[in-house]
Length: 410
Image 1 (cartoon, rainbow, N blue to C red):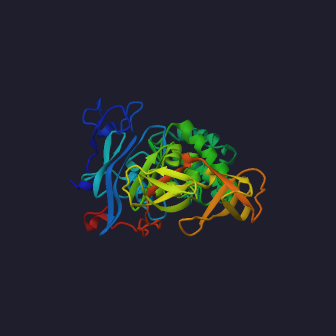
Image 2: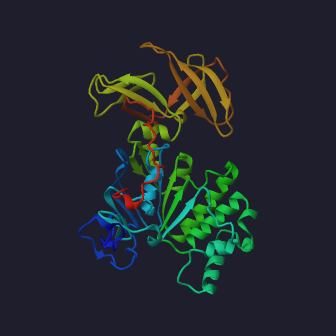
Image 3: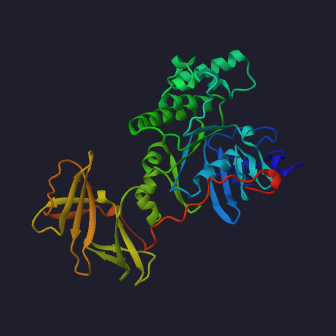
């Protein structure tokens, strides 16, 4: 038998976020069908998966689990491997290493490859992909199998009502706006009651006002359905709005995974801190187990004296007050709607002046050339190893893998 299309292998499954990786799990998944895991267990597990195109490793030893009803977001710059990871979960790519487990059943890796149509997976992408030759109702009913025509129509209408599109059941896709097409695409993806929903930059084609509205509606629909969701985006604000947990990717690897607040408040690396918005970066050298700055000394645990580090400070951590004896001079002030962006220069006795940005709210009293004192929220200042902040060269994650007739591929 061709290993690429062999029968899915059962995997042990028990309670907990990584149940199928536990050899002492509480139950064995049904080997003949995709049997749901117990409540609280994982719906999707990526177990040390890697994917490569030729000599280029696009995804490298990635592991995570997504629980039923949870939305996990893969976040990172273009070319970091997040879309390839999503494609492996979908069955559009097969890992060269590791395994993919869906509801306790191995569906990818180790010689097993269950095709996408057998994985009970729903898709929501940027381009909607509605069939232009059938109406909205028929589009939504298309993926509902093993039901009578009346049952399919009833389920399709139920989903259209859930997304507020029941009055457009007889309309054609070309008659809909972008936001309406996205709602119909969501209804179609959820209509067959998939175990897993995959979202790949689904809102990037919409204007900002409509994007905010549609992603809010989408989030409510997904949460009410209880489906397991894996989403890809390069927009940190969108990730924090949508996700229960976020996995930050860089160069094909996961740098940090956790809840949005954890990643924002306790970043594990300079790259993570800077990905959630602009940061002030002050180069420094460790001395006496600490880093000296215009704001005092900061402990540098884990570093040796003489190590080059960066003191990373979020702009919103700086509070300003006008005063002739302040340490900073205002260079430029901009009102940006909900916040103000203040450019400042801080003269340093140790070297060149330090350029800082502060984000404030309320009126904009900081006139250019004025002196200001600065108060720092030390919980939003971090000491990290000095490192190159440029992203690795984008990897060809959009390159299509060769067909299976050419031999092993990912």
